[in-house]
Image 1 (cartoon, rainbow, N blue to C red):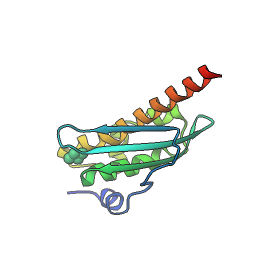
Image 2 (cartoon, rainbow, N blue to C red):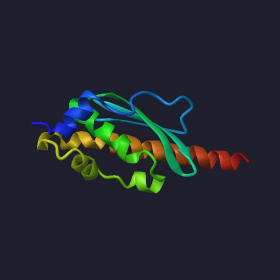
Image 3 (cartoon, protein in one colour):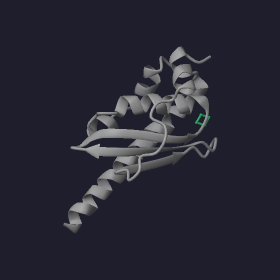
Length: 128
Ligand code: FES
């Protein structure tokens, strides 16, 4: 049984789509079920200015990634990378036990997008 928050985010996911010329992109898939998430970031002054995601996944993965993008928006990179799977599940007032693993996709993709941004930023500094 899904909570009202899960149903809300699943039926009306926030921040879907792409960010053209994103500063960081992270993609992660779950080999167990074949689902995947891709997160796009625009970063300004070390903060997440814009965030968007594409997904091929189950209702729980859509809801967890949607609420994650709301939680991460406007946060510093340090704050965003510290968002845990438990934080996401709690923001949705819980998930069925068999669906808790679905929260790994969004958080994993967000961390990869932050790493991608940092690697690009480091390369730009090396070129200068
Ligand atoms: Fe694959 Fe939910 S069952 S992410």
